[in-house]
Length: 538
Ligand SMILES: CC(=O)SCCNC(=O)CCNC(=O)[C@H](O)C(C)(C)COP(=O)(O)OP(=O)(O)OC[C@H]1O[C@@H](n2cnc3c(N)ncnc32)[C@H](O)[C@@H]1OP(=O)(O)O
Ligand SMILES: CC(=O)C(=O)O
Image 1 (cartoon, rainbow, N blue to C red):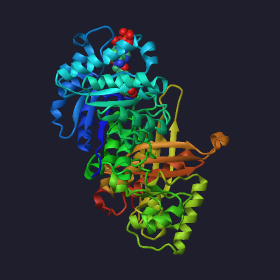
Image 2 (cartoon, rainbow, N blue to C red; image 1 turned 180 degrees about the vertical axis):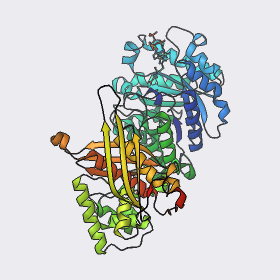
Image 3 (spheres, rainbow, N blue to C red; image 1 turned 30 degrees about the vertical axis):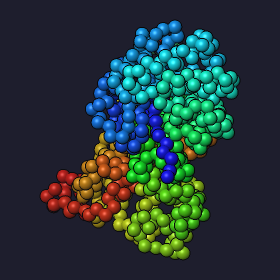
Image 4 (cartoon, rainbow, N blue to C red; image 1 turned 45 degrees about the horizontal axis):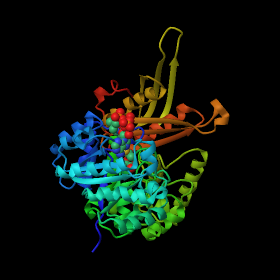
């Protein structure tokens, strides 16, 4: 039978010690709910001795009616030269009514002397008294042995004495912390093995990521006998962060055969990682293992050719096990297989020996050489593919466009665009103002098309980015414009490249509308309304 490893999530405590992360009580409630549905065993909600926000979280956490996780409050051992009964931190843990207390104490003699400036004996008493006090009040107690590995390397005998004190006082778990994140996996494994021979209390690991080894060190500890792993979602945390549970969990479960959470819950891992990232307002790196959007994205033509034959050729697991999915990117590194994959996704019927496929791949490579980038412009790519295989009916074509920008010394700038199109065999033109040339073009184009395609009223630009491609040419440089659009149920991106920023913007805008109109039919405008809506009779 597989050994169970308990997952202790500290996103709401150590995670918030990461630079740039500040969670409101509402945010904490939302994340706690998600963590519970993911199936973690412990949720460390904060430090009630630190601030009122954390106290409010603990006061409200019962509202969540958590099904899987136990909530735990964090704090330190009692202050030196006091009684535990008089210690604010310990009493706050009791007051917030949690079933589990997690307290940290010093294992490293250097810290006892330098950081808390007391004697080695008093530190041992602080550990013993604090654990005993919480236990005598009926709590499960997790003792975090701060800096355990550094302490052990400096003075093994003293470090071991500290955790023996916690054990004597009745701690339910002893969690060895690599607080400065400087240990190597082989050191973790050797030291955990010694600890296993010294105490009988279950052992956990709390590893920081300063050498990018938070995950590796957690796995080493488990393989040496630890049965609890502390970490955070996406590795948020103090300095370089904590062990990333989003990698720890599937590594333990899918690679090493331990049991952490259910398979159904594991299949929500990508959603949880993205959700927590969103709430914390932190960017989720595309290449984050297991859950990033690029974790199963294939770009090189050789790779795509092989995964079309068998996904395992370039994928270490089935992406759906962690709720992710396979993607194929098209760029100058693509082969015909990349296009075959895309075309199959679009439901188009063609084979990869087709001359058109070869022509299209050459066209894409040539356009990327000119500055296009299709990875970030899925809609422009789809239009090109549909066009190449003769499946694209153009909803409109441009006859002309004009832009006027008028700026006088004492008046605000005014921008107007006039657009003339051929739609449904008819010429239509419209003028519109905007707060800049792109906005004016967007408004004029929209005015021309809405009369034929009313659904466009739901389409909006959500982002507009310009990148200069040949900086050395300064104002004569080429630019790449990326436009992101949405109709509130989906979003898509388009690209335009030109030496003229208006033309590049126009191309990206037009592609956005062409994409929005794929498969839509045109509405015929009644005769009496033709002039009002800008139609010209020839
Ligand atoms: C490894 C970790 O991540 S531990 C968690 C770190 N997280 C945080 O510090 C976030 C929350 N912290 C806070 O809100 C504040 O620091 C508080 C409320 C806890 C303490 O604030 P203050 O009373 O103003 O103290 P301050 O932060 O300046 O100094 C820390 C004090 O804790 C003491 N201390 C540190 N570790 C321990 C410990 N394990 N046991 C007992 N006391 C400790 C220090 O000796 C120092 O007290 P002293 O000045 O009397 O010697
Ligand atoms: C307890 C803790 O957060 C640490 O030692 O890193």
